[in-house]
Image 1: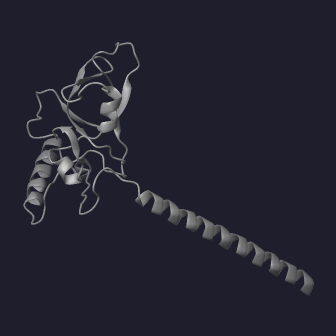
Image 2: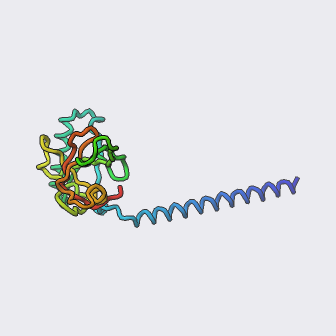
Image 3: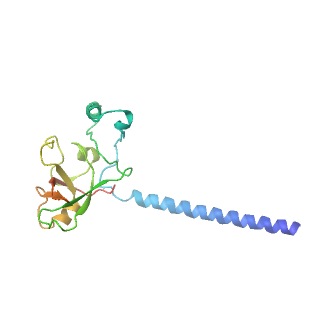
Length: 193
């Protein structure tokens, strides 16, 4: 009976060592992955940024009242000491998926498959608030209002893919059904969010 207990105890020790070794390897791989990820450039400056996220509709705000609340909150945040830029965005980096829209260039055949592009709706000062460099054109600003052709800032990779031999600013993108979606007003460095 003593010999059987000894073998069982030795078996448990071996199992514990195996589990501990597996956990150590998993922890080491996790640390290595985090370290590798932290060295990847995001394309925006994460330092000295603050994020506030809310779903006003979930708190009983009608769309118009929500817009007033956001505008007033942004104005109050801009007035705080040390604040350089404040903006809104529809998709939070690393936390939410991007809305994707199918589009085509005017020169593309309407029967050709459309490409897809991730869309992040932003307010003026977004690029300054995120520390994202513009490579050409301008950022979204207060002149981009309803009733005009919607403005878009595309990434450098998107610009190079769609207009390899042309200047992208001023180009237009159309939806799958031929409707005008956007006019390119700027090109920003690529981001990885």
